[in-house]
Length: 355
Image (cartoon, rainbow, N blue to C red; front, side, top):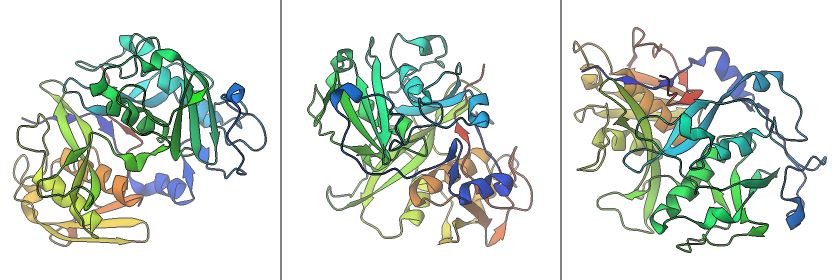
């Protein structure tokens, strides 16, 4: 059965020029002068000259292109309890980062937009009282309802907030406050939470043979089934035995696939061999055996397999482009809707749910 994935991929032409100049989807990232954390009464978007506000936040420069865009990435829980990025088309409002968080609250406006089997992750009634973005850190202040969750959901809440906010190019770290008070640990299970970043991972798991404290973390994008025709990508941070060849390890973990008994799957055939992985000039080049071409009629590559490679490699290496080779040669023709005969960049949106 051919499964249609939910997402978008953009070829390197045009978009790569934007990325390579240090610009993100919402405009260039700006450095801000380091200052002390805001007093409790100022946990809001600061419009002073020292604040780095997101486009759309109060005090941020107006970006016409960003204003026209209404597709935002929120993080939700799927039917299996995984934290998953979902691109939703939501009303245009000022304060886009705060708006994204409001669409992650149970009982909130996202309820009418939830894909099949999905649910919001933040406790019902939670309000975003304010947010300030300075020096790459987003300090977000939640209402007291934020504390009302089950202990089993604590890490999922942390992961979802961190991933959602660090989707914005001006945010590298997240600090959580509740009702004007900074948290040093989460309120239910006491997980330390002084400052969170993307290195914290998501849907964390320990690989077989890995020893805690002696590991390398890789985030790979497996797939799950939405219905009988559509699948979606699920990021999983796997702690593997320590290695210096992180990019190669990413591909090898995708080939290994999810853990036994997992509801997830990988579109990469387990017989695929990783011949070589190189990183240079902002591009990761991956050379695979011709087993990657045994999809469909046995002469082409699975588009979902290739997209999972691009997602996973750009996530872990920081490089913007991925060149895929088969037995040392670029793919000779387009695969699905994408042209993998040349380097491609990370999708502009992941899991764009459309009905």
